Length: 532
Figure 1 (tube, rainbow, N blue to C red):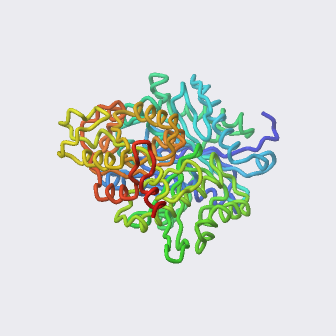
Figure 2 (tube, rainbow, N blue to C red; figure 1 turned 45 degrees about the vertical axis):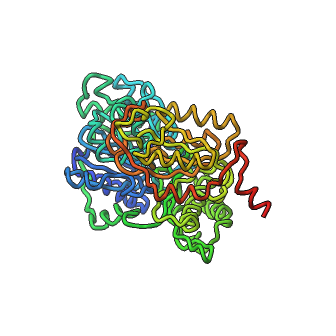
Figure 3 (cartoon, rainbow, N blue to C red; figure 1 turned 45 degrees about the horizontal axis):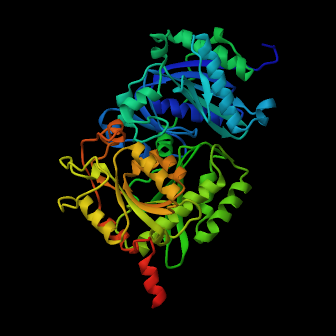
């Protein structure tokens, strides 16, 4: 460590309100950017708090009723990324510094990676060997032990990290709205397989002072700063405006809005878009974007929302590229094309709802390539896929691909609608069965299909739909689902014991646009039109 390395103030704020911790970081970053606060490394722990990233829609990520009923605070970070649950068993770390020297040359992605590596160096002192996982995680043996988040203001940046010393998986899953791919692969059991804590690795949690010292030294060595632990302070004591903080918490709140929502999953996180679309004028009246993503500048989504008003769907992609390019935006793990795709999906959902005369927001669209009109996907559909959980629990055909059409449940009617169109209907009995079925359809040359699943599954297993390379019109199911009941593992294995329900009004309306096919697959409706 050379004398030229900047000396940084180190604080240990102890345990306090999670909302206060988030507000302190936001205020210190603001003061640092204004030249009124020095470089700072702050350690802190929080009382039970569920928090969302800067760009997330809070009601889409947190179970607000559960949090309110169980004394769990809710808060919004100024940093990007996904939703988190904090309590006294997670160690929070916040580094605020200036973009001077070599820091000014690093991208957001590289800053996140470097702070992950700095955290790894500190954990190494505690006897833990952690590795960086793009874009912002630390893992041990493929299981997450820490995450890092970033925000910038002017020439200052804030790097926030949370280290799992110990973790209450059940409360975490209750506070956060499942599913989140990064939190859990298969619910409670899967989360335990996906996450790992310091206690699990070492058999105990080291004393707080040992953790602070080890992490400080690791961060100082990798980030090329000097942390003077001999002057560890308990502050910082600053005045905070919690009225402003509460307004910030609700910055992106989609609750109660009727606009249609589209999702698009990228390596950098899930993008969400909502639009108010005037189908008569053919233009966007209002747009809203959210996601568990990192991007800079932080107001790029706001610029897009404002810039897209009045544009027609065919102009969306060009407008997104111009706005993103003019902002010189850094998008971590996603692109302007991804933003355009989710916006186009939202516009098509809104327009299709009117064209198909749908009453509810039940459609989930997946386009293999270009954004085809929903009717064109339906015209090309060659199969109908249904979830086994929609069959009655007493039905002996529940775990079979077929259905006898006995007339005692909704699934039989869907099979009848498919049969009348000379297209196969297949009950998906497990996640492995889904991937195998989609693979077989793809190999056969299928270009499109109709399906039913819950929106949670669509988000969580978005990659399976993308990998299949086929367009799909999917309808959300209602009633009991494995995500709300924390039974993903059983559901994926084909052992889910509750029953979901199909919105048959939506199914019938959608199937009206699926043509009757001849035995050889020819579209008889199109032939009739041709001869007419």
